[in-house]
Image 1 (cartoon, helix red, strand yellow):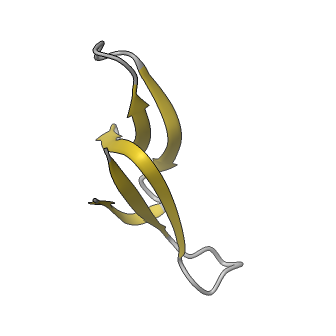
Image 2 (cartoon, helix red, strand yellow):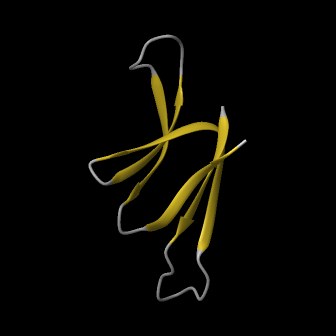
Length: 65
């Protein structure tokens, strides 16, 4: 699996955007929520959600190998 890097929006408290990085995961957007997850086994429903980000919280995300 790949690494997913998420760039979060600036908050009033921070002058720079924050970067979150997750290794050996997959990502998807469901109803405006970015989900970072790790699949477990052959079942499509066997997965562990690592993090979730609301649409208004992140600028963008991408995969890195």
